Length: 149
Image 1 (cartoon, rainbow, N blue to C red):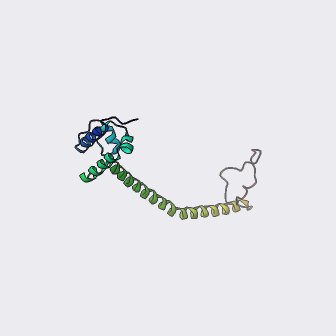
Image 2: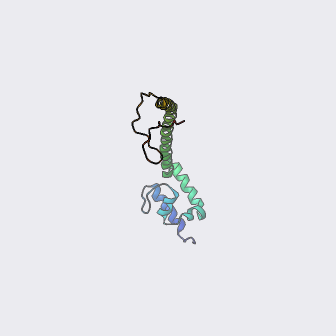
Image 3: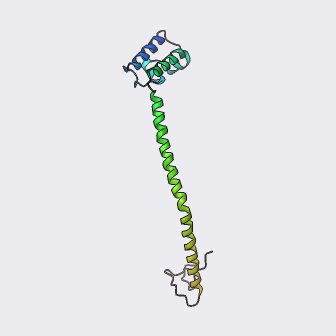
């Protein structure tokens, strides 16, 4: 698309409106996208044809002491993500701290289970199976439950 004759004038007017908080065609953000919208020109007019005006706009924004909206949003996003990472790291540390206790509990339960299975194999076991052992064909079996190991 070729530039219109008044493109530079429209960009300068857009710069003036944005810096004076009088945006008509954009959200008023101090960004190149908002400047293009405010000037009613395509973004590439600023990034390719009129880079001098783009740089002038950036210098005026910097001189004004205003932080561009994009930077403000990105900094807020960085802060939010850092908090999320910290929370995830805290949760991960807690889960890692829980693992040894859970491993011990599984080990103890495995040993207890082995002891109970051994007692079932003895002739006078004082352990009573809560549910009878079902054989391969679905019939009840009087044999003890095989040892898992």
